[in-house]
Length: 212
Image 1 (cartoon, one colour):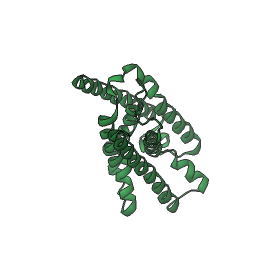
Image 2 (cartoon, rainbow, N blue to C red):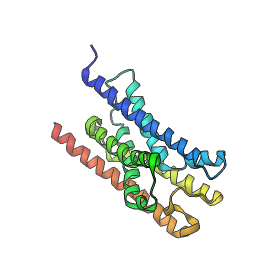
Image 3 (cartoon, rainbow, N blue to C red):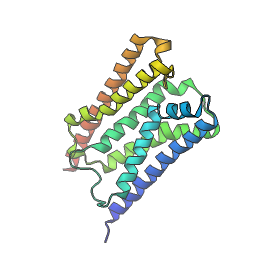
């Protein structure tokens, strides 16, 4: 007989996956409806947002966990993938609340989607991390591999922005801020990933100790 906890875990991951992926799809629809550039450029710009990529990553990860054949293996030993995903979506929430929330005032459906992408889904992912991550397998050495995704993202956005003059976030806009300031901001953001990763691992180790 299937384990009830595993079935509940499947359902919870399914709900998170559908919510995250569905919200990204709806945001894509809204962006197409209100596009200010060609379709091709709009597609590229849409996937230039760390918020979009990371919420999509949360959705895909959650659905993979839901449909794994072996329902008991949600995280490979020492993998820490859920922690990495949680770090990324936590940064999405933090940066938005601190730096971006005051820069615009979405209305209607856009406001709902905005809150889902930047507040609700990050909060749910943190809760899932607390409940489902195998914290005893977390290692500080894992951080270096977790940083590959944000590093590649920064490189892509800065290079493309240099040639296209489109920057998804104002603190990365070289045209407005200059190269030096953008490099400083990029370094600070990168260090934020490091600090948040350290915090999650430290908390995870404390939680693991309490469970033993």
